Length: 485
Image (cartoon, rainbow, N blue to C red; front, side, top):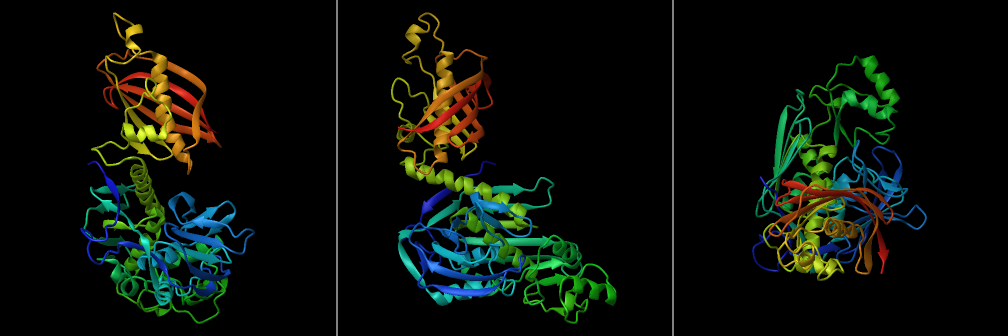
């Protein structure tokens, strides 16, 4: 089934349900909180500050020279081993998901998260302290409308080994359903559902992070959970330890208090806040990771056995479609069928004009990776009278040029602003012409980026006749440079 995702600006009135906000918002005043990081054990002071419209969510490392900012989006994710880490250069922030979940749960669009360490404080292992703090700050409605990603058709991610599925379905609000099954007697199979964000602060934000007893020693050996305590994590007992073994393990962890395996299947008999608290925490984590899309969702997300690794792969799919639709909004006056960019949008991006504009439309784009353009070849092409009068054939060099123009539409989108930039050929290699192209043919140009060094791009390009799965007409490896006009 084909997947389609639309990006819409929320109307001030109309087809969004009343409980979905229509305008962007930030917090009304700054608020702060302090504690230690879960994995690093570092002391961390964190401040939430208001931010202007269209600013998004950014973490700011005020303990580093220049106070570098890290946008909270999928493009800046650097590690997902035991939480979601984002970074710009040497500036990184670990375990962002609980803070991001609170921001999403409070339906905040624009905010600065200042830190003087590389990890937010864990507090009690949930998102509750953060969302309570944000609610206490109050909210300021801003003038710009919200961007919603509207799920129009089913979007499905499945892990390569088939153990994890995350699916997005059309829905007239935001809804999320999560199922987990660790085959552990203390947990069993659990599921939970959030029906709208109004439920998040009290029903899901309090759910604490958890791990299994067999993982604890390994995590500590890896230099993780340095700030882990019984007050900020739920440890599920999944192995038998005698009292001496348990005491030795706690000694390694630096915990000197009395510890018991627990009769309820949880270390030290910690009481759950909800009977399905682990499932609710997995939902919390998924919401936090979905903040990295850069826009709230209008749709129903269903996830079976999610975790950060697979959450991020799913978010990559949605983030790519989000950026694709942002481009549509910028260049395309209206969406036309399966067309990503029509000829009018292309003319806004490329400087070429008749008789040398050789791409009619773009029908697929994977931002930063691949693009598919189309050229309708008619008998009225200006080159046919001379090539050749009695047997018109499209010159191979123009097929190469058309592939390069398609590639230009792709690589120019690597830059935030490219109105004054041009894409120039620097080399053509391994060019081969397989089939003649004649009047009536339709060429599909499949171009992908294979390498990049600053403003120099290497492209692999192929031209197919009459469909993307048609006969191969031509292929080449191209090198292009982006330069200022």
